[in-house]
Image (cartoon, rainbow, N blue to C red):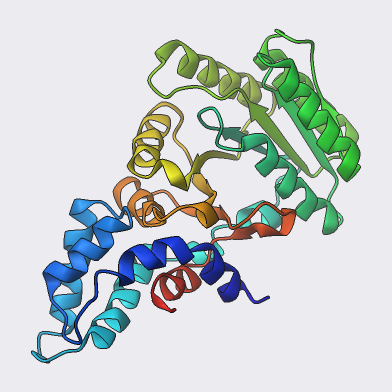
Length: 299
């Protein structure tokens, strides 16, 4: 299955929410705006996109819905700039060990996402190390260890309740001593509204930086698309606390709220690194703005 077909399959619910609003052969900016709001682009971005489509078609007062959709694809793709290469930092960064800190609220799929990224790197021949920094849940430690065994990837962990910063420090030192090319640090899920828990993440970040100057090289937030506009709030708060460098959006295949991907990029300015298009390991795909824009509209 091609990348476009993967996006098309996964965005079926979002696409249905959009195209259901186009009920006549002619188009209107109001109709376009309603369609985009229905897909959780958010009122402001939906209004901006509809206005952009209107400008593109201003010399064609009898533009059809099909022509408006073609213009909308261009407008949506333009939001993402060079995000088509946003995932390349994972594969091409020269730092060794290159350190990724993964953060997010509970239930977004951070640990599974880390495992899927680890598989990609391992399949390329990279030596990968994982750190089980979610020490608040014994199940989280066991889950990452289980993934490590399945993928033949090493995992650094501590005891249940151990200091997450200590686990991160030990992982950095092992990565340096063991010649690992990539280290990915899992963290406990936490609500972005809990200042004490956000401060703990900041501490983990400082510990990593002290052990390996320049690290973490990337700090990515994992959000799940079904939360819609709340994912945008999460991105804003985590970015304020941690200076994020990217976002991974999971569960695009199970929601009609796929427009939140564009909202995060537009409102926060963070690159979309990967998107989850299904449950299988290969369904975590580098984000492709063109495939995303096309799949939103093509039936």
